[in-house]
Image 1: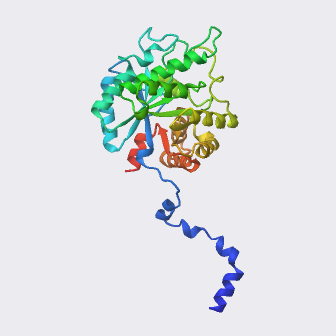
Image 2: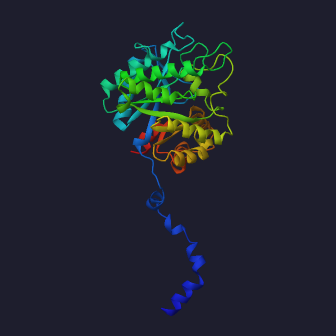
Image 3: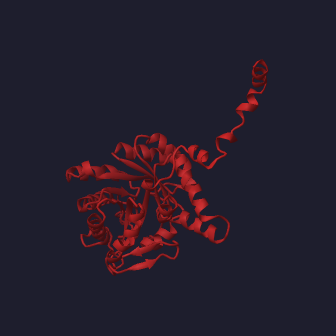
Length: 340
């Protein structure tokens, strides 16, 4: 026994450096995860158009389609059976002349989003419905709010209009409204609108509090037909290096009543996700694996550079490691199979 004690004392550093015994088995490797991916944390984005019979593949988004209201239930039935728990709705108005300067079509009772909410509440009563709240898909200029004559954002009119849309989605039966415009003050305006409509107690407000302007949204804009007709969104979405601005935006939206936080994009912004998990530690943090990130993984797999399943798990596990609890992902259908 004495010899053993002397050996241990002499080799204390070497012994403490041996870590591989903790992950030399597949189950042990699972145990090392502080958080594990599961089906409940996935939110699947859906593009719903005002052409009721549309079922159109999005060329820049492999395996993703845009659906009309008549095609939606049949598509979702299989996914719900596999364990899909929540969806994020984006409306895509295609009819000529339906877009105007204030995005009137966004909360049209006969429009795609409100019709989809009612359909999903009826056919899939256990499905949790989030609605993206923005005007870019519905405005003639393609920007996320109402504009002044000089083309800049009219903050007051914009947040008033965005709040009205959010309240109308909640009235139609949406469980969650998720404003993605990044215009100052819209969370407060939405909360006040929900309180006035007596819906605040049953409507979750999930803020895109840290949404960055960048190069990863192209396929989404193809799907949602939401490209600005001029200019860009750099004056209301965060600049790429704006970590401090993101922290300020997180604190602002929490102070205005946000119930959850979205960080968008995800892969290149894990530091922001980690910041959010500290600043907003008492609310769910959601990573949005955006269209460009999704397309890159598919392109890499197609080129033989990566294995799609392995890289998908690696990227999505990274979001959890950075502090996310939820993930908006176009790969949700694949994960429903992989996690079975």
